[in-house]
Length: 221
Image (cartoon, rainbow, N blue to C red; front, side, top):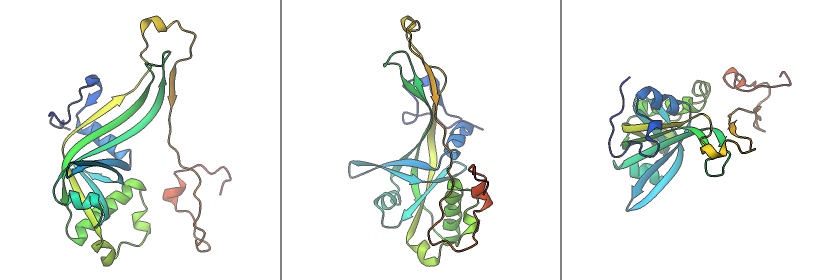
Protein backbone atom coordinates (compact mmCIF):
# COMPACT_ATOMS: atom_id res chain seq x y z
CA UNK A 1 0.00 0.00 0.00
CA UNK A 2 1.04 3.61 -0.50
CA UNK A 3 2.49 5.92 2.11
CA UNK A 4 0.61 8.74 3.81
CA UNK A 5 1.81 12.12 2.57
CA UNK A 6 4.46 13.82 4.69
CA UNK A 7 3.95 17.34 5.96
CA UNK A 8 5.00 19.66 8.77
CA UNK A 9 2.28 18.04 10.89
CA UNK A 10 3.26 14.40 10.73
CA UNK A 11 6.95 14.15 9.87
CA UNK A 12 8.94 12.52 12.67
CA UNK A 13 11.76 14.82 13.74
CA UNK A 14 13.16 13.27 16.92
CA UNK A 15 14.68 9.88 16.00
CA UNK A 16 13.50 10.23 12.42
CA UNK A 17 14.74 6.72 11.60
CA UNK A 18 11.94 5.32 13.76
CA UNK A 19 9.25 6.97 11.66
CA UNK A 20 7.05 4.93 9.31
CA UNK A 21 4.52 6.39 6.91
CA UNK A 22 3.25 3.34 5.05
CA UNK A 23 -0.42 2.48 5.44
CA UNK A 24 0.27 -1.17 6.31
CA UNK A 25 2.21 -0.20 9.44
CA UNK A 26 -0.18 2.58 10.50
CA UNK A 27 -3.25 0.39 9.99
CA UNK A 28 -1.70 -2.58 11.83
CA UNK A 29 -0.96 -0.47 14.93
CA UNK A 30 -4.43 1.09 14.90
CA UNK A 31 -6.02 -2.36 14.61
CA UNK A 32 -3.96 -3.72 17.52
CA UNK A 33 -5.49 -1.24 19.98
CA UNK A 34 -9.02 -0.19 20.90
CA UNK A 35 -8.41 2.98 22.93
CA UNK A 36 -7.09 6.19 21.41
CA UNK A 37 -6.48 9.70 22.72
CA UNK A 38 -8.24 12.34 20.65
CA UNK A 39 -6.87 15.88 20.73
CA UNK A 40 -8.67 19.04 19.62
CA UNK A 41 -8.77 22.75 20.45
CA UNK A 42 -11.85 24.75 21.45
CA UNK A 43 -11.51 28.53 21.84
CA UNK A 44 -7.78 28.22 22.30
CA UNK A 45 -8.01 25.52 24.98
CA UNK A 46 -6.50 22.12 24.06
CA UNK A 47 -8.35 18.96 25.13
CA UNK A 48 -7.16 15.34 24.94
CA UNK A 49 -9.86 12.75 25.54
CA UNK A 50 -9.43 8.95 25.74
CA UNK A 51 -12.08 7.16 23.68
CA UNK A 52 -12.84 3.86 21.97
CA UNK A 53 -12.62 3.77 18.19
CA UNK A 54 -12.81 1.61 15.11
CA UNK A 55 -11.11 1.83 11.72
CA UNK A 56 -12.13 1.11 8.15
CA UNK A 57 -9.64 1.99 5.44
CA UNK A 58 -8.24 5.43 6.21
CA UNK A 59 -11.20 6.43 8.39
CA UNK A 60 -11.32 6.36 12.19
CA UNK A 61 -14.75 6.28 13.86
CA UNK A 62 -15.54 7.51 17.38
CA UNK A 63 -18.86 7.82 19.18
CA UNK A 64 -20.50 9.07 22.33
CA UNK A 65 -23.28 11.18 23.79
CA UNK A 66 -24.69 13.81 21.47
CA UNK A 67 -24.10 16.42 24.19
CA UNK A 68 -20.42 15.61 24.78
CA UNK A 69 -18.05 18.52 24.24
CA UNK A 70 -15.68 16.37 22.22
CA UNK A 71 -18.29 15.20 19.73
CA UNK A 72 -20.10 18.54 19.59
CA UNK A 73 -16.80 20.22 18.74
CA UNK A 74 -15.77 17.59 16.19
CA UNK A 75 -19.17 17.79 14.52
CA UNK A 76 -18.38 21.41 13.70
CA UNK A 77 -15.55 20.25 11.45
CA UNK A 78 -12.57 21.21 13.59
CA UNK A 79 -9.20 19.56 13.13
CA UNK A 80 -8.37 16.58 15.29
CA UNK A 81 -5.30 14.58 16.24
CA UNK A 82 -5.69 10.89 17.08
CA UNK A 83 -2.91 9.03 18.89
CA UNK A 84 -2.51 5.37 19.78
CA UNK A 85 0.39 3.80 21.69
CA UNK A 86 1.21 0.14 22.32
CA UNK A 87 3.73 -0.35 25.14
CA UNK A 88 5.91 -3.36 24.29
CA UNK A 89 8.66 -3.32 26.89
CA UNK A 90 10.85 -1.46 29.38
CA UNK A 91 14.34 -0.91 28.01
CA UNK A 92 16.81 -1.21 30.89
CA UNK A 93 20.15 0.39 30.18
CA UNK A 94 23.35 0.54 32.24
CA UNK A 95 22.86 4.24 32.86
CA UNK A 96 19.76 6.07 34.05
CA UNK A 97 19.99 8.42 31.07
CA UNK A 98 19.59 5.70 28.42
CA UNK A 99 16.57 3.88 29.88
CA UNK A 100 13.70 3.85 27.42
CA UNK A 101 10.58 2.01 26.28
CA UNK A 102 9.92 -0.23 23.30
CA UNK A 103 6.68 0.90 21.73
CA UNK A 104 4.57 1.21 18.61
CA UNK A 105 2.63 4.42 18.15
CA UNK A 106 0.52 6.25 15.58
CA UNK A 107 -0.28 9.93 15.30
CA UNK A 108 -3.00 10.70 12.76
CA UNK A 109 -4.52 14.01 11.66
CA UNK A 110 -7.93 14.67 10.16
CA UNK A 111 -11.20 16.57 10.35
CA UNK A 112 -14.38 15.31 11.99
CA UNK A 113 -17.50 14.58 9.95
CA UNK A 114 -20.86 13.64 11.50
CA UNK A 115 -22.30 10.32 10.35
CA UNK A 116 -25.95 10.78 9.43
CA UNK A 117 -28.56 8.09 8.94
CA UNK A 118 -29.33 5.15 11.19
CA UNK A 119 -27.87 2.52 8.86
CA UNK A 120 -24.55 4.31 8.55
CA UNK A 121 -24.47 4.91 12.32
CA UNK A 122 -25.10 1.23 13.02
CA UNK A 123 -22.34 0.22 10.61
CA UNK A 124 -19.87 2.52 12.37
CA UNK A 125 -20.98 1.45 15.85
CA UNK A 126 -20.56 -2.20 14.92
CA UNK A 127 -17.07 -1.42 13.67
CA UNK A 128 -16.17 0.18 17.01
CA UNK A 129 -17.70 -2.71 18.96
CA UNK A 130 -15.87 -5.32 16.91
CA UNK A 131 -12.58 -3.50 17.42
CA UNK A 132 -13.08 -3.84 21.18
CA UNK A 133 -14.35 -7.44 21.20
CA UNK A 134 -14.88 -9.32 17.96
CA UNK A 135 -18.14 -11.24 17.90
CA UNK A 136 -19.93 -9.25 20.60
CA UNK A 137 -22.13 -7.13 18.33
CA UNK A 138 -23.96 -10.10 16.82
CA UNK A 139 -24.65 -11.50 20.30
CA UNK A 140 -26.44 -8.50 21.84
CA UNK A 141 -29.45 -6.27 21.26
CA UNK A 142 -28.79 -3.54 18.72
CA UNK A 143 -29.35 0.12 19.66
CA UNK A 144 -32.94 1.35 19.51
CA UNK A 145 -34.03 4.38 17.51
CA UNK A 146 -34.08 6.41 20.73
CA UNK A 147 -30.56 5.29 21.63
CA UNK A 148 -29.30 6.16 18.16
CA UNK A 149 -30.85 9.62 18.42
CA UNK A 150 -28.79 10.45 21.52
CA UNK A 151 -25.58 9.03 20.07
CA UNK A 152 -23.25 10.98 17.82
CA UNK A 153 -20.86 9.13 15.53
CA UNK A 154 -17.92 11.00 14.02
CA UNK A 155 -15.77 9.87 11.11
CA UNK A 156 -12.23 11.22 10.97
CA UNK A 157 -10.67 10.71 7.57
CA UNK A 158 -6.92 10.33 8.02
CA UNK A 159 -5.28 13.07 5.98
CA UNK A 160 -1.76 12.50 7.29
CA UNK A 161 -0.33 9.96 9.70
CA UNK A 162 2.95 8.64 11.02
CA UNK A 163 3.90 5.59 13.00
CA UNK A 164 6.89 5.64 15.33
CA UNK A 165 8.45 2.42 16.56
CA UNK A 166 11.21 1.73 19.07
CA UNK A 167 12.46 -1.86 19.37
CA UNK A 168 15.57 -3.75 20.37
CA UNK A 169 18.33 -3.40 22.94
CA UNK A 170 19.29 -0.41 25.06
CA UNK A 171 21.78 1.99 23.49
CA UNK A 172 24.45 2.63 26.10
CA UNK A 173 27.50 4.83 25.89
CA UNK A 174 30.59 2.84 24.94
CA UNK A 175 32.24 3.46 28.31
CA UNK A 176 29.23 1.99 30.16
CA UNK A 177 29.16 -1.47 28.57
CA UNK A 178 31.70 -2.73 31.12
CA UNK A 179 29.59 -1.69 34.10
CA UNK A 180 28.40 -4.64 36.27
CA UNK A 181 24.74 -3.72 35.72
CA UNK A 182 22.11 -6.00 34.18
CA UNK A 183 20.75 -4.53 30.96
CA UNK A 184 18.13 -5.67 28.47
CA UNK A 185 14.41 -5.51 27.79
CA UNK A 186 11.55 -6.40 30.13
CA UNK A 187 8.67 -7.28 27.77
CA UNK A 188 5.16 -6.05 28.52
CA UNK A 189 2.32 -8.30 27.45
CA UNK A 190 -1.43 -7.75 27.67
CA UNK A 191 -3.65 -10.70 28.52
CA UNK A 192 -7.24 -11.39 29.49
CA UNK A 193 -8.23 -12.73 32.88
CA UNK A 194 -11.10 -15.11 33.62
CA UNK A 195 -14.49 -13.40 33.04
CA UNK A 196 -16.50 -12.35 36.09
CA UNK A 197 -20.22 -12.90 35.58
CA UNK A 198 -22.79 -10.16 36.21
CA UNK A 199 -24.44 -10.76 39.58
CA UNK A 200 -27.82 -10.63 37.79
CA UNK A 201 -26.85 -13.08 35.05
CA UNK A 202 -29.59 -15.60 34.31
CA UNK A 203 -29.21 -19.29 35.03
CA UNK A 204 -27.60 -21.47 32.38
CA UNK A 205 -26.07 -18.67 30.29
CA UNK A 206 -22.58 -19.78 29.34
CA UNK A 207 -19.55 -17.73 28.42
CA UNK A 208 -19.56 -17.24 24.61
CA UNK A 209 -16.83 -18.90 22.60
CA UNK A 210 -15.58 -15.54 21.27
CA UNK A 211 -14.74 -14.65 24.89
CA UNK A 212 -13.68 -18.11 26.01
CA UNK A 213 -10.86 -18.38 23.47
CA UNK A 214 -9.27 -15.15 24.75
CA UNK A 215 -8.30 -16.39 28.20
CA UNK A 216 -6.84 -19.44 29.91
CA UNK A 217 -9.03 -21.06 32.56
CA UNK A 218 -6.93 -23.42 34.64
CA UNK A 219 -10.06 -24.82 36.26
CA UNK A 220 -11.09 -26.33 32.95
CA UNK A 221 -14.58 -24.78 33.13
